[in-house]
Amino acid sequence: MRVLVVEDFEVLARTVGVGLRREGMAVDVVLDGEAALDHLAMTRYDVVVLDRDLPGVPGDEVCRQIVDEHSATRVLMLTAASSVRQRVDGLGLGADDYLAKPFDFAELVARVRALGRRPGTAVPPILEYGELTLDPGRRVATRDGRRLELSPKEFAVLECLLAAHGRLVSAEDLLERVWDEAADPFTTAVKTTIRRLRTKLGDPAIIHTVREGGYRIGEP
Image (cartoon, rainbow, N blue to C red; front, side, top):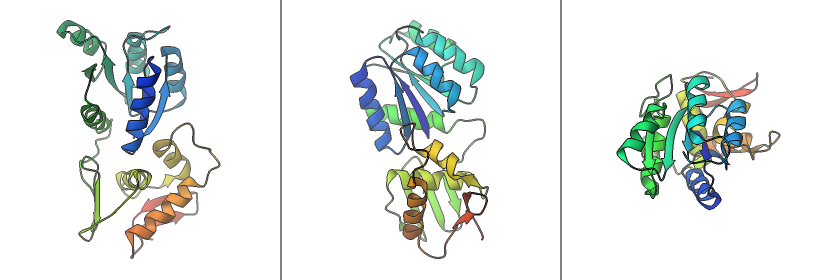
């Protein structure tokens, strides 16, 4: 899942970013509305965690532009404005959810995951291929009844491949969806993660490299 955190209190912004990365998400962090719009113009995000009170371009305007131009991107308003009237106003702008500060981080993660499962093409809550099963909500993957001990990146790559339902997923797509803007586009991270994932999945191999430059799950 690719997430953009927009929060002008830098300590909170970086803390949320680190926490979401530990949950296996690819996270970019910006501190004002103008930077948020710049990122949204270049990158497709599943969820934007958006502070309403931002310097420069206010959060309300960022939300309006997301709704107008990025209909597949979900917005979670994260703000100290917590009255019923303020929540109603925020949702009226097109935000998909609203979480008042202070908040419990586990609830934030749950809400972000719930929004991430609401893109234009629905993703089933449990992803399966043969005896391989992946539960994104519980962060559990098993094969032949054996639980797989996967790192957050390995889990996220496997989730992307399973969600593609046998279609080719390019290395560039995996780099964009699983890593964040700090990732070197020439890195071997995707290839290395795929290699480790194959080892953990065991035989018979189900992740196949396609000559055109990508990966897919299915028959050779």
